[in-house]
Structure formats: C-alpha cells, structure tokens
Image (cartoon, rainbow, N blue to C red; front, side, top):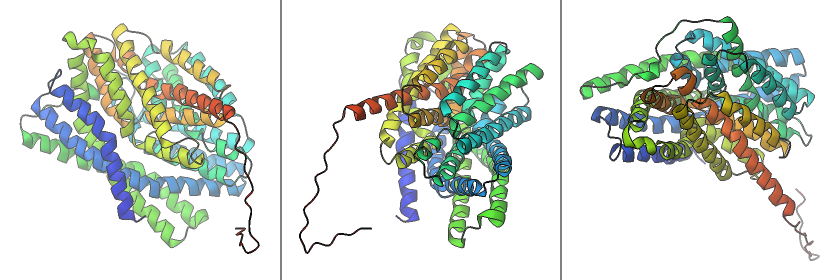
Length: 506
C-alpha cells in the first residue's frame, strides 16, 4: 500500500473516531445545553484540527516512533550489557516522558505543584520503572507479582498521603502514557522480546506501559511528603469567550506557534537520542532511516494540530458543558450522558489505535481490534460514570481505586498472563489527551456547579479511566480462555496427493 493510501486511511479512521463525540456535543448544544455561538464555532474549528492532527499523528507514529522503539529495543538487548541497558532505559524513559503532551496539560492544571517540579518527578518515575521493566524481561520475573508488590507500596503510601496529592498522583500515572510515550514503550517491549525464541516472549512484549504507569504515582506520592507548593489557578477552570470571529482566529493563530515550540522542545531530546544511537550502534540503511525521519515530521505536525484543536476548541467547551449539565433539571441526565461520551471518546485517543494494532498483530488475531475497542469503550463509559458519582457525592478517590486495583490484581490469577499485561497497558493508553483536555475540564465544571473541592474531587477522573480497562480487558481474556477451553479440537485429515503432485516445502 502506498504512503498516500495509508495516509488517506488514517484520516478516514480519524474522522470515524472523532465524529461520534462531535455529534453528541452538537446534539446537546441544540437541545438541553445550549452553547454560546463563539464556543460552538471554536469547537467546530477544533474538531477539524483534531481530525487532521490525529490522522497525521497515527500515520507518522507508525513510521517513526513505533519503529524507533522496536529498533532500539532489539539493539539494546543484543548488547548483553545489563548496565548499558538499564542506563539507556532510564534515559529513554525520562526524555520520552518530558515529550508527553498529556503530562504538559496536567502539569499546567495542577495549582499547588510547580509545573517543572511535577514534570521532572513524573519523568524520573517513568524512567526508573522502564529500567524495572527491562530487568523483568531479562530475568523473566512474573508481571503479576511485580504489580502486587508495587501497588501494595502505593496504597501503603496513600494511607498517609495528603488528600490533595492523591488524585493528582493517580492522574499522573494515567497521563504519562499518552500519544508520545505509549507507542514508543510498546514498540520497545516488542523489540526487546523479538530476539527471544521462548514461548513467553510474546507475553513479555506487553506490560511495559502498565509498569511505567506505576512510577508517576509513586513519585507524586513521595513528593507530597517533602514538597509544599503554593496555591494557584487551575488553567482549565476558565472558559474562553470571544467577542467576534477575529478574536477567535487570533486565539488559534497564537496557539499554533506556541505548540510548535512546545512540541519541538519536547521532541528534540528523543530525536537527538535516536540520531546518536543510529551513528553509534544502530546503523540503519539509508531508506529505512529516511522513512523514520519523514515519519517524525508527520508526528510533529500531527501533535501540533491535535493539541491546538483539543486545548483551544475542547477545553473551554468541556468546562462549560459540565457546569451547564450539573445545574437545573439536566443534573438527572448527567450520569447517562457522561457515560455515553465516555463510550465514544476512547476512539479519539491516538495511543489506543497504536495499542489495538499491536495487540492484534502480536496475538496473531487472537485478540482483535474490535474486541479491544469494545472492552475499552465499556471501561471508559463506566469510569466516566463513577467519576461523576464521586463528584456528586464527594466520595474520596481511595474508595474507588483501592477495591478497583484489588479486583484487577485478583483477576490476574485467573486469566492468561498476556491478557493481564495487555490490560495494564490498555489502562495507560486509554487515559490520553482527550481525557485530560475535555473530560477533566468537564469534571471541573460539574464540581464547581456542585460546590465541591476541585483538587480532591474533580481530579481523579484520569485515574479511573486508567483503572477500569484493567478489569474489562481481563474479563474479556477470561471469557476468551473459557471459550477456547470448551471448543472441540479440529481434526486435521491428511490430504491425498497424486504421484504427479508437487509439494512446496517452504
């Protein structure tokens, strides 16, 4: 398939992904939650940029970020030098996380922690747990027991942590594995496992995203014991309004150079690392190397357009919708509406498409993209519903995440190991930029209308989005395992060949 055909396919996929949530918002705006004209126009422009950005990003990441991760992972493992593997894994984890746009969005919105302090703490957490992931692959350590150990440490710290750090900590674990980090880490795992010939190699290629999601949670919880920042404003808590179309146009035109610079600074360390690795160790041929560079250009353009669209067009809209629906008679409809939005919004997450494609490819079709999509949509719908219930009734985040993770870890003893690894990876990628820039402001709007505490109640929606796929995907795995167990084996009858038949043996 030519590059033009692939790009066209990606753009059509982006249209199908974004169109449902666009239709829901449009329907709400024309019926029960009327929007100001300027916000609606901004949303329409943002949707167009979102579709174009998502299509370009998906096309570019397949050609660049995914291949970079696979090449680096395979080459790292062949060195057989444990110290080099661990040091480079730590470096990769930090620089890729700094480039994560989701983390930038969350860090700006957390008022009581300095933006750079939060980014550095979270990046170090991801880097450390990427080294843990490499140790696990090299030594063949069971993923289940690592999850049990580290989540036990998380909940021990959470019992004594400042409540204003709890929701932010669990949200940090979700946003760090977004459109930039997740494809790279997934491909890195595939590359590391690809050179192994044992039967557990396929299973071990998953789970890196799930393990790396633990690092930020621990990092922010530990930070809460030592760091006391000053209060500030939540960026997503202000609705942008426009007097006329010129103001609206200026907002977009000013945002594009800002995100061009931001993404360029974020991608620079990743590109520099890859170029050095190419010169020193990788030594790819000219054609595949040029393809990766071209893919990085598409990835860059896609991220710039995507972030401009969601931040300018979706953030204010989410806040306004949440506030409007939480007041008056519509508050009785907010639960089913937010679950409906959750069902469709997962399709607009860039990293979800990367994971679903990798899962179908590595499992040789045993886990299809469709089944993964249904499991994730069900999970996110449930997560959105629980998030609204938590805000409406002021329920602490631990009342959800503690039993939720306990159930997820319990399920890991009854499903095939690969499904557990896929589930924890899915939890990381489902909580992407659409959740951070649309659903988080929506939750803030609901929380403000209900007079709740933003830090302890509105924050935490990303955490629940990251949690629920752990349960739904493992249930899907349990069902698939039961079906395969009860399926009768097919008897293969040898074919009869004539004396003149030619049998190809390769």
